[in-house]
Image (cartoon, rainbow, N blue to C red; front, side):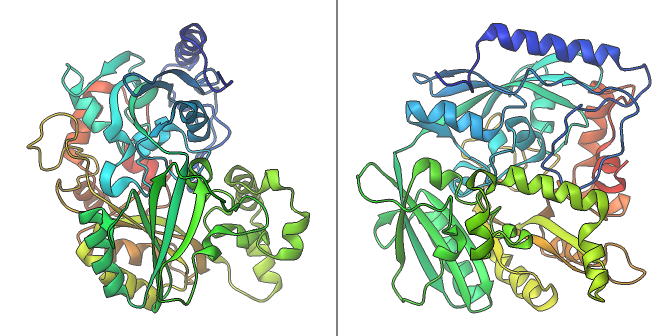
Amino acid sequence: MTSTVYGPEAFERGRQRLLDSYRAIPDGATVRLAKKTSNLFRKRAALSHPGLDVSGLDRVVSVDPETRTAQVAGMCTYEDLVDATLPYGLAPTVVPQLKTITLGGAVTGLGIESTSFRNGLPHEAVLEMEILTGAGELVIATPDNEHRDLFFGFPNSYGTLGYSVRLTIRLEPVQPYVELRHVRVHSTREQQSLMERIATDREYLGERVDYLDGVVFTADELYLVLGRQTDEPGPVSDYTDMNIYYRSIQHDDARPKRDRLTIRDYLWRWDTDWFWCSRAFGAQNPRIRRLWPARYLRSSFYWKLIGYDQRWNIGDKLNARKGLPPSERVVQDIEVPIDRTADFVDWFLEHIPIEPIWLCPLKLAEPSPGSTDAAQPWPLYPLQRGTFYVNAGFWSGVPVTPGRPGFTNRMIEHKVSELGGHKSLYSESFYPRDEFDALYGAEAYAELKKTYDPRGRLLGLYEKAVTRA
């Protein structure tokens, strides 16, 4: 078995180190993870004391191919999780786009990918969570035990109620290859209509659809990408070196453009160029790319470059040399009901000078854990059961508006709320407190906070997501 899997004994040692590090934090001090990396696009205040030691909680504990489940430590990355499950012909039901996203992070902070139209979100595959609460207690939360309130309230809590130590998740069978069809459409309305039909029928032109996402390049160049699992042998494409995946989608033909990838390369198709964001570092320039080591064509390396920019404001200094204003970072994922997708994209293309836009449809899993008649089973991110939504992702910057920090981001927040949607909280947010509370389940959150972090050892959700304390 690969090194991404360790046994229960190693996990026990990691769990003990975590508990010891909690007890070493001074009483009254804020408890945080002592991790050097993050997939969050918001700054954190510096720690004045050692944080929680999660160094031994970064692998798969076990994989059970008979029950199609895995026990996974909370800090295990999806890259390591996939490497542990693929030898069994299994994969997590939803694999977020970037290799360095951790399972615990995707559950407490939400995640999404091209299986979400049929499998929902990563936390809906969780059967059991072992959580270190803000009170320093280890609790087991399931959909039907005494900690079911924490089980359902943990998604979108972003480490403000506790941290996942171990999760038991469902897996799904996968085939060795994915056959792709890139379907071009010529308007946002056409794209919305076709996406809703395919998400509902799970097929297109008589061919099954297992994976579904889309890209908007311009108002009249839009695509849906349809994937079908297959064990049929044949040639496959490689987008881990010189070739760039998102550029391979584009074509002028009225017929779908076909392509094939191994299942592993499909799952990580976006990671090599961080969708299209590697162009900001020059990595898509063929002359630079030839010299760029392939091992550094991955999101984890781009994160380091982003860290340098945040520390020394490199981008703004370069802009100043060119006589340009500093940039407002607009790095966001939002969700709107699928029938408002074209409304949002049309508005975005008119007002926000960022392209491309990634689109990914989702619907809460059926059946999901717990009560099947709950209209909104996950109170801190209250999506409506039975409704298709579309996630829109856009990651770039715009010229800052003088005297109005966060102006463009706040404009986007207004529009998303107007269309009945929500915004993910992994990046900067600018909501006033009352609007934030109405959107993100403040009443349920207050009860959870009172129960599992009564002394306020962890930051509050608003403080972490908006005021960036």
